Image (cartoon, rainbow, N blue to C red; front, side, top):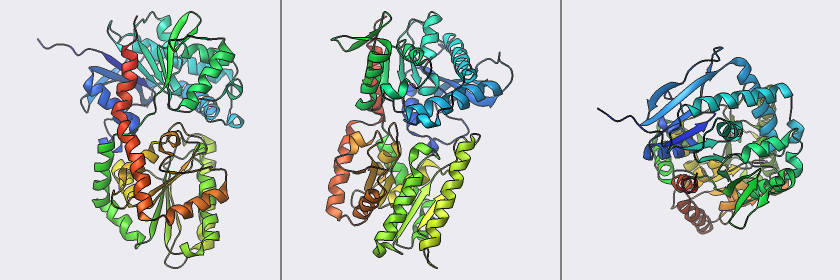
Length: 464
């Protein structure tokens, strides 16, 4: 009789990889977590992406790419309040330092907590005595708290993929004390950077009167837990191989042919106000104003797949970007040269990495970003004999690791970004190689597998 698989590791996130998508299109989180689950018997729990008005819908179990999944649907009301209303209209802007975009209501908060409790009920049915639970991102911050209320006493960790705001920003949120209380229910809380960690510690100190012990633990309401920085990364070898395949694919060859030996500047971001795409377009326009020698010789391709299409603000952002792209091209295009290509659609990960390998400049200037894995993918995708230059915002988490090799800019300084872009386009080969090598050395020491091992190691050390 075959042994039933154990739930040694239970990963919980709002989104889970779809069995309908190819492995090549998976992002960094999916690659890392899938690898961890393949090495540890366990399963991935999350929303199926489906809307179903049956609040009593049970878990749907299936296996995909040697990993077991358990998913469930949400009702339309739950999706509107939990995901759109509170996660994306309150926590997302707040955590990205944009309190002006916070749209708070108690109804949406109630929906956020109601769905978190539903997650907890489902996860509680899967927990075994030796399980470890790894919860991901801002949508599910309360989950650990509700699992503790349900009597679950196994190690539970939470990793926040977004930035974490400072005390004066966090306390804009009504009932912020409860948000901090939810974090304190975990055994290990992980952040992208030491800056995010310091912000969290400041909030726990001022907003929750937490005690900080010599052994590195934080105590709040009688519970001790650890908070550490675990910067997420990528699967280096996979990214390099996909980049080589991408260049040789039909789409990669078409891109190269369309450039007609012109220099490629590449930006890839989900369509979101935090990514700074509008200011990036303005900086590229300023480059063309100042550097006439670049006319006809450089092409900036910005890929921004649609995001949160049911939120009006994102539709407005798309319209704004289309307008400024048309304005730039109207000013500078010639009969055989269109300087700015704005593509509001998605491409496979292989194609994206192929485009990044063809690029002389990776142009990634978010106004605030937890990490920005595209920056790391750009570095990994480069040809070691002729690498490109990364122009990166100092407000991206990745800048903490890549600052020795990237050209690090302030995305609010349009003139400065334009100058840095010109510097990148004119950088000599030897300097490009030296900068690329410094970034690769950092990434080899911290790839996605190291990130998983570090977090799960900290979680395994928890004694209950």
